[in-house]
Length: 268
Image 1: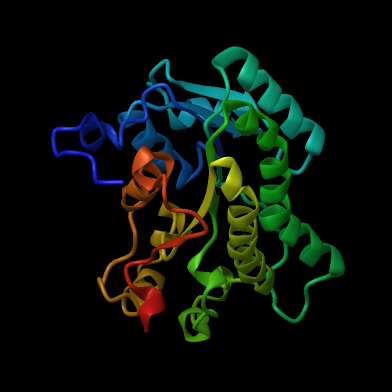
Image 2: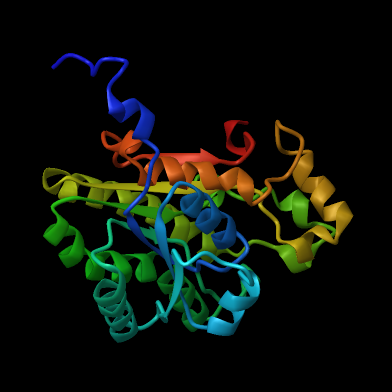
C-alpha cells in the first residue's frame, strides 16, 4: 500500500486524542500529573485512578471537565473491576490503559523479608497484570486499544551503588528493578498475544526523575546529573510526550517496544 498523500488528514491528526478515554493509574502523582497534562492537551479524556480523591483535587485545583477521578486500589482485583466498570458507565469505553501506579516496601538489599519482596513485586508487575487483564474486555469490545506500562531504567541496568554512598536513604531496592524488568517482559508477552486483536502494548522506562523532596538534597541530585549524558535530571514534563505518542494513532504500528526516557543514562 502506498503512503498516504501529504494532504491526507492522518498526518495532521495523528497525535490528536480527541474522544479517547485514557485510564491512568497513579494519575495525580509526581509523574502522573505530567502524563495527564500531556494527554489532556491533545484532547484526551483522562480518568485518574487512585485511592485518595483529596490528593487528586490538591494536584489539580483547576482542572478541565475532561479530567476525572475514579477511586481505585490497584492491589485489589475487585477494586480494579469496580473502577473500570464505573469509568465505562460514566465516560464510555476506554481506548488506552496506562499502568503508572506502583507500591512497594522494604529497602535494604540483604534484609528484605519474604513479605517485603512479594508485596513489592505485586506492586509493579502484579498490579499491572491485574489492570491489563481487567481492561481487556473493554478494549476487545472496541476492537482496538493501547496499553502502556511504566517500567524503569532500573529494569534495564543495575544501580550504580556509588550514587548512594553518601545518601543511603535513597538506595534503590532489588525488588524495584526486578519488578520493572518483569514489566518489560510482560509488555513483550502481551504485545505478541494481543497483536492479532489490534491492541498495542508498549512500555516507557523513565530514568532519574527525582521528586521535589529528593531534589532538596542537592548533593544527591549532583550524583545523578554526573551519570547522565544530558547533564541534568528529568523534569516531569520531559516524560509527557512519550505517552502522547504511544497513546496516539502515530504509534499504531508500534508494539512490544520499551521507550527509554532517561537522558541517556543507560547508553553507557
